[in-house]
Amino acid sequence: MTGLSWMVAAFIIQPQIPLFRATTEIVQVDVYVARGGRAVLGLGASDFELFEDGVLQELDLVDAQNIPVHIALVLDTSSSVAGLGLSHLRDAAIQLMNDLNDEDEAALISFSHHLKRTAELTRDKNRVRAAINAVEAKGATAWHDALFVGLKTLENVEHRPMVLLFTDGMDTYSWLREEQMLPLVEQSQAVIYAISRKERLPMELGRGHLARDRARRAARSANAKRTRLLRKLTKTSGGRFIETDTTENLGPIFSAILAEMKTRYLLSYQPREPIREGWHRLEVKVKIRGVDVHARRGYFYEKKR
Image 1 (cartoon, rainbow, N blue to C red):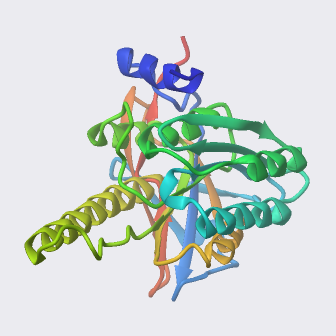
Image 2: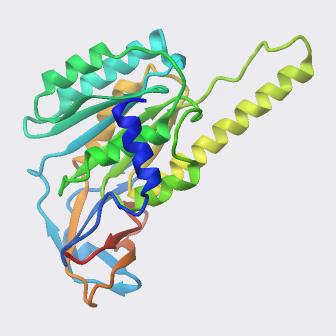
C-alpha cells in the first residue's frame, strides 16, 4: 500500500476530521456567472444576493483578479487511457501549465489502482511539467481516493483552490465508497471541475447477441452512475461537470476551465446571525435574468479551540 493509500485508509478509520472548516466569521464564496455558456463580466456586489440558512447577507466583492489560482490536477492514468489517450492527456496538462500565471500554483496527482502525488503544490511549473511527462498508463481506476487526495492537497489554501479531475472509467479500486464522497466535498472549500470521457461500449463480447447486449447495458449503467455522482459533486462545490466523447479535445477543455476559474467572482460577508457550529446552507442569486449561477451550496463552521 502506498503512502497516499494509507492517508485514505486513515481517514476511513477516523472520518470525523473534516478537510475544511470555516474558522473565522468572514465567509468567502467563489461564484461563476454565465449566459449561453459565456462568462458574464462586470458585475458588482449589488448585483448579487446571497442567503445563508435563508437569511439575506450584506456582501462585499473581493478583487480577485490578482489572487493566484491553486490547482490540484487529478489525472486518470489507468490502462484505459493508454496510447493516444495518454498522449492527449499529457499535452492538455502541459498546455494548462503554460496557461498559468507565475504566481499560480499547481500539483499533480495521477491515479490508476495506485495513487501518486508526483508534484506537490508549487509555483515551479517545470517541476509539474516533468511529472506530467513521466506518467504512465496502467492498472485499474480509483478516482474516489484520488479526488480525496486532491482535496487534501488544497486543505490549507485560503483563496481560489480548485481541483481539475479527469477520468474515463468507473471506480473499481477505491477505499472510499460513493456515499462517502459528498460529505468530503461539502467539507472542502475547493471548486471541483470534472471531465469524463464516456466509457466505450463493448462491440464484440461473447458469441451471442444476448451476451453482447448485457455487456452494453452494463456499460451504459456504469456511465450513467459515474455521471450522476460527478454532476452532484461538482455542483455541490460550485464547479462544473463536462463529458466528452474523445480525449482529442482535452487541451481546449482544460484551457477553458482555467479561463473560467479566473473570471469567477469572490463574494465576502460576515453572517448577520451568530454562527452556530455545523453545516450552513448557501444560496446565491444574481439580479439579472437569463444567467446560470454556479456557487457552492454551503460550508461547515467550527469555532477555534
